[in-house]
Amino acid sequence: MPRQSFQFGSLPSDQLRNAVISCRICPRLVNHREAVAVTKVRRFMHEDYWGKPVHGFGNSKAKLLIIGLAPGAQGSNRTGRAFTGDRSGELLYQVLYDNEFCNQPESIRQNDGLQLTNCYITAVVRCAPPRNKPLPEEFASCRPYLIEEIRLLRSVCVVVALGKLAFDHYFKACQDTGHSVPTPKPRFSHGGVIRLPWGVTLVSSYHPSQQNTQTGRLTHSMFNDIFAMARSMLS
Ligand code: SF4
Image (cartoon, rainbow, N blue to C red):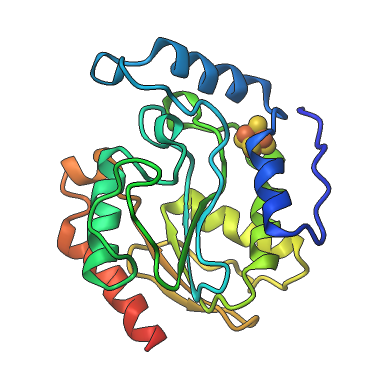
């Protein structure tokens, strides 16, 4: 079991960011993220990979919180920004733009001019895992960072969980912050809407992974409907 060394409670956001990007708690994930950054793939061979944990991105006063699974090896592990530089991000930022949660439909690299509006994006694990599959102890080790973000983002009233793992680990993080999770625990379903006793509405969605989009499990229209619903809840 990796050593849990991050102490959460009341860190300012810049200290949280520094704690995240210097984190080396999970040896398997540290090895993987750094190996990918050295090996690279042919189409990005000329780029300097980020190769570190990826911090959350967005507005500290956001009312919408989006929670993904973990950085993509050739996406945000390369660019250093959530959902930036891969197919999942192409779909996510397109629908965020279409629903006025950001100022441009593309997210290519840091400093590309992208700004989120009333929205913050994070993940339940912050280092790229082999085969996109974090281990249970890696979820547990990374959870304090999500808990700290939940504490800092006091204006959030709608949460969109991208995929069942994000959905499950959002509940675990809320439990750890002292919230009473409804019993039986709500079940994940695409388009599910759960009003939680702590004043947040949780919307669940399939993750915009290529595995889901290429098989037709998640279409552009289905994904857009999720954020149109979030938009209408906030307006
Ligand atoms: S997954 Fe989270 S806890 Fe593990 S090394 Fe990365 S940032 Fe640290």
